[in-house]
Image 1: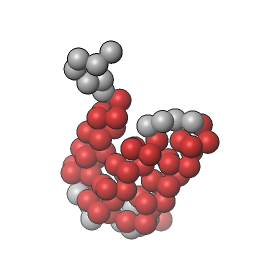
Image 2: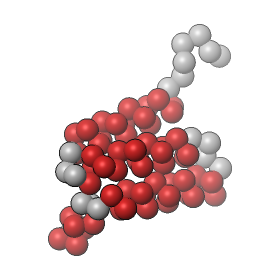
Image 3: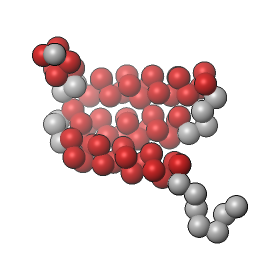
Length: 74
């Protein structure tokens, strides 16, 4: 458990997670995967510094932006 806590303090952990999401999305043909991977990568500095609120909110809002439909579009 301590090992995992230490890995969560490193920005490269989130960049690796981002690459995993991107690659998995490419293999599974998920069109939204690059945007989600970018959201995780952009939140990496906040998450690695322990600012979980900012990091998780930014990822959540980015994912919502990917999946929400725009008004007026069909």
